[in-house]
Length: 448
Length: 161
Image (cartoon, rainbow over all chains, first blue to last red; front, side, top):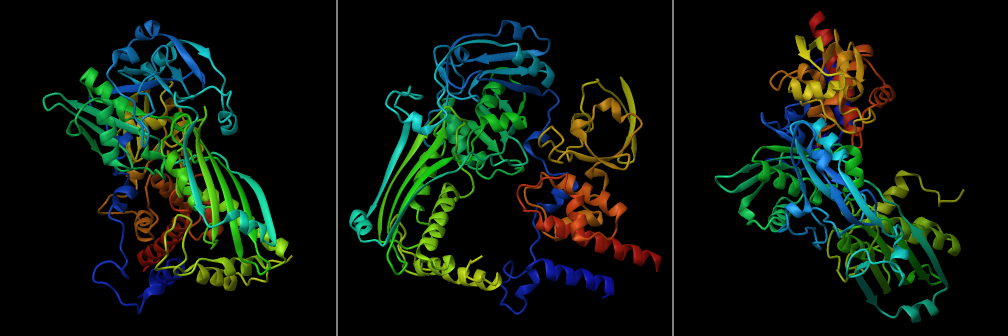
């Protein structure tokens, strides 16, 4: 081995974890071996095919006319000027697709196109599908579509949405779903606590921002009666089922082919381009392509939920948590998406990795006219972490004890029971993790 | 209008409109889909090409501006069977996840190493600062460029033997 080659090896050992397993028992194929990613070669040469890299000779381009107001009744839509644009092949509005049904991950509350007399509920709501020979023609025609609306009160705050006099964004009211959590006697435990600390926390919208925007291509195979859709999705078969029911087709008539995905992080769990592509492909009989711009992706597709968390936490004189009461109000925006599950799950993690015998919680996922919120890494737990770790720091300060020691006292152990009643029977390394962090950071008790 | 330019060593002559972006010209007219669109605003680096020796966001360049230019895209760097050391390093360092930013990252890495064959980690970070990755957290991408620097140094010393 030359010196230079040795340098590379040394460098590798220092900078990756791969060499640290020497001496550890290796499995035959993968564990303890360098495994290079199978698709890395395609990706470093530019050969990997993402949805927007798929082309057909007679490809048509799709653009979507979207809402002009976050909360308004569509009074009239006029596509006469748009239709005159050179290169326009088809413009689809709601009246062209009367049989198409709503879609959605948990609750099917999202319309495929808004019809006159119906409401647009956020800026991403689709009003028309424009299909043209070129992107430019599609864009030009989209911008010539004229829309008349009757504006309604725009609700951007879930607390306003929950007030009695707030207009209903959906027919069944603005609270999508409520969940409760109850264990032990919270009131009695607060009474007997040395310190009770109540605080309100607010997190914000975050876009998952995968590098690749939503994009796809569709081709209708008329002889087989099958719509082929090449589009990134995280839940291939759920998307297939949702697209099929929306178009009143059987599942085997919707074939979703997953190309390489340019990131997702939860954002691509929801239907995006799929149904509009299928409609355009079936009506034109030609391959069609729809790629969102970054702005369109930001306005139209899901976000991390902003959650208001109200935590009331009690401790005894020895620094053990006694009771925890929590409220999670999640702004799920105009549509439910994964919201009912995200906000619920967030509440179940309200106490983080800390033992607490008495618990009471309520969570509401609430409709507003904001862009809808759905799945993002952590699925509701990241928001909760911000709130419970702040509580722990504040309580440690009030108790005048080291915040790390305070955490160690309360940390999950094997056999701890989580708020939703799960007993942790193995792999509970939280205490070890804190101790290791204290050691590595040369922890001095957190004092200035 | 007609433009003439060199892409990955090959001279091309094409008819373009004034509003065609270099990005679309490369992807749609020449089929070089290794050039990616992330933001369309020159912020994310996914559409990076090397134009006349400089890192360039191809989404911000009107195609007519590419007249007489020399352009390198990731496709011109190496092939599957004959990877450029930078591409090889990205594979070996585990720097590739979703891969959408990788063509731009690789070209940014190449541009850096062309000018500065022995960069410090700080210089690598600076060299990649125009390119956003949302999967990796950058650590392994930085590793890959450092590794590529070592590989290229070895290649250089081998050829001088």
